Length: 446
Image (cartoon, rainbow, N blue to C red):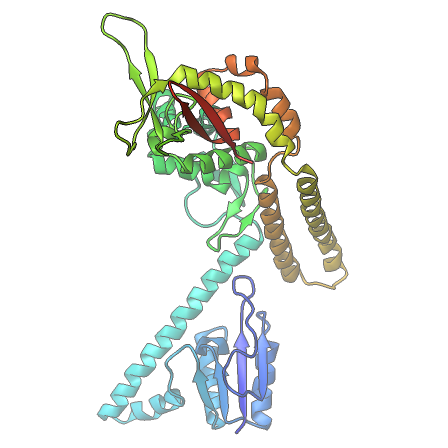
């Protein structure tokens, strides 16, 4: 018993399969990876001279570019006595031939076969139409064109890329600037509603912050990202800053993440392990406001007492000025620099290959479609490497630590600005009680 197998794939949107996936002992595998289908022609020729007993395909529509081609090839192959097995499709071999013969007879069996045949042909036609659509979308991806659908808010569709919409882009820019300054998603949503009258939900604001489009990149349904396809509204440095703030805010409650006080969401009681919330007290008849830190989930009885917020704030500033340079000194900067150099070298190597592709097309080493696909794959790989670099701590961390390790630096900041810098460096502040006095222990982000 001889078995042939035929595999056809469009590598612009499909992952190349292993020719040995069939689970059968196959004598010959024919595999086409482009529209020219040279292997299909070779298969039909070999079947004419020495037909096999079985032909394996993934789906029947692989046997042609149109329904007419598929039907013609099926009739041709079945006429040679070849049993066709579609692995991913319910198909009875010789159904086309039987359908044609039995349709002429008017019995019940003929009617059943004809119905099955019509359903099968409709399925083939629908799948081929779907494949053409997916191929068109893949070609748009390879040519770095925007995906189908409405352009994101702040952009409009140009000829082959997104173009900044000057009428509404200031709303998006103000939203980003406010978030970068204060680190509060809900606060930024309220800010653009008040300033521009643009009302959006918090979830929409979060999508704006994480959408690669606003950073000049395109992301497609397969989650691959191609960088620098259009003019960004958010720079690379600002995008990395946004990502760090969002990661930091995930560990906090929404109320703490958007609270105006700089220590909100950071302080925990070392005695009872409870998070500390900020309470505001304004005695009647007095214009002065008092702030306290008190535990929210203290299991002890009596409960741990509240402590003056200003007192803990001062101790936190003193501790960060003293301990931050030591913590930064413990970060292995040579290893970070070495890792960064390695990633930079990978990016440079891939960019070098990209620069060689036009010459390979001119010398007919590669055709244009293959070069475009290779360029697209290289661009997505470069994008992934640059994303890894963006997640690393800054190389000049020591210089930054020296700048912020000055008491006056913190005193000159507003509470919102101070909150931003605290969350850049501090993961948690443990409040250690020593009788009526207290101290703080800082857990840094690195």
